[in-house]
Image (cartoon, each protein chain N blue to C red):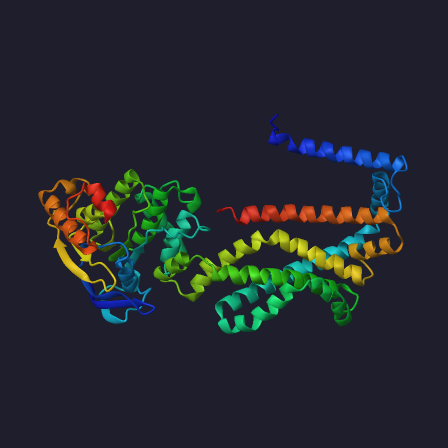
Length: 259
Length: 251
């Protein structure tokens, strides 16, 4: 269980977040959406511990080693091979090197990277690098994964495949997820709950939407669920109000783009 | 007309042969004073003499020892001080002004001082090579660590790595990349230090031979030694390039 209570954050005296609260239950997939620059990533950095809030608390029932983090940049060490990068996440937590390498190979194979273990990140495509980063996170058997727009840099087809892999694995392993994204469709199709962060400065959580689409989910087909369109319209309308824009319903892709 | 880049070496070699032939012909025709510009055949003869009677080897050994000694010590100390200064602000406060000053002056002016302090033996030459290389490596490492990719630092931190893990998995490999990127410059500096040191005061070494050739107005010997130094540095450049290519195979 992850619970963020009344977190406030400022950068050099400039307020960013004010009293932001959210919760991620065990095995729950939660997304955080909001206008650009509202402080979504900053809130995630507070949860990770990379930023110190001026007020509020972050309660987490998971140990540090049980939390996996996936950023937009895969941030793989360029001088280590795919195998070494994945194994590093394990050896840093005390696993024997031989076991770590075996685990790394297992997870790379599971994510379709068998045969690419000895490649350096520069010799991998964007999608492959993202899978290596994902293997690095999953190999640690996390109970909670924090993601900051991890799929944003991928093209549509690769993105769909990686997202499908992630959903299948987190459902299978019952991993809790907090996903920061600007993509409303992605948020609704993947999540059990979506939080809307208001326009900054002094951004706070203004809405929580429960997504009743059953699991296991196919991220593409879940968009055809009857509740999806209604939720999407509501989320878009609320987000438009936050950024002070038009309420007219744009095409879905335009909406995601504009968000 | 398009030039095939694969045959560039043939064109370069042909041009060199032409220049040497013209130079030789000009000397033969009496257009060049051999006292200042001896023809290539005289330089070749001087080279042959140096190697055939074996007297070049102690000089080569002396210069190599001084240059490589200064290079290795300079790299080790430069990396150590650069890492310490980048990680400990107090050390940076003390070291940065000194290193900036040393970097600002032409460091070869220290050669006579090293001769007074360490004598005419090899120590003063190693010291000059060392000071040239270590300042270069210090700034390479110091500025490099401060500009290390923050995403990699955060990645290791979020994976549960502490300070030692950061040094081992992020800082040291980054440092190695920066140092290797400057290795060729450092090799050039190391040989400059050794040769200048020998030029100032020595009893052996290529710099000493140069000084001897100058004092005896032996331009052919001087050209021969310059040629040897060029070949030696080119060989070491090539070896450094191979080492860099191997160690940086991830790029």
